Image (tube, rainbow, N blue to C red; front, side, top):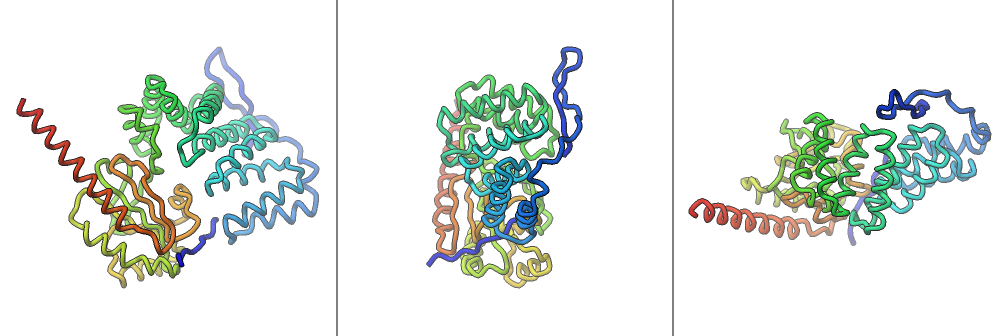
Length: 359
């Protein structure tokens, strides 16, 4: 039987105006009056339950839905939380619908734009990150509308570039990614990726792995978008996870097999809350490959991790190739195959380069 462990999850108003024919800006406006349902004891109880600290993502989502139902589907905070949790758990069609409902009840232009942006992001992630043309067209219209009101929205600029690339409007996509590069510092998590996409907009049409920048327990800084040409394995685990301990020997064997191969990076991402327990376990089990404790579960959330052990393999272009959950995952087979292809491609590129130099 497959082993896995489920893991737990843990504004002011504005209005749009324009000055001197320039770009629209957001200005503060008085907060709206409290809705009638807010004083309902049943709603207050449901809201408190939804906000309780330790509960699974699924339970939290259901609790927010319950609170929203009591509020006659008009609770803005509920709909925001529901949308974000559905995005996190991969329920993208539900997230798109929830975001549209959130937009309809949002009381500020800022929150309406936020809801709209979430809806567009959900549409772009339909069908496993390969949305149909109609869905991308809808998303592009959403991002275009957001940028008309908030032209400096980084998320909207980047997502608009992706939508334009998928629709084959490469020159416009290239301009969007160049704009993103110009408006963000080099430390921005999507800056390097935007540079790659501006050079080759076709890359933006592929299912890229969520970007990350982290510093390992060994002090090494790793940025996914600086790993071009390398195969990456992400291993999400925890010391308290029994099935994770079952998969540890396989991960250790892979790490030893490829320890001297510059084309392979294996990163074990711990979801431990206790740093001492994590450090002790890593040392005791001689886990010498890159180790990272995902404090706050930011990386796990980006990858939609709700159960462990959870493995992701990423190819040399940064494309997410496989996702496997549980102790019966075929991690070695997938990694070995990707590494073999990477070395073959590198050899062919070197041969072509040599041939070109000799002509």
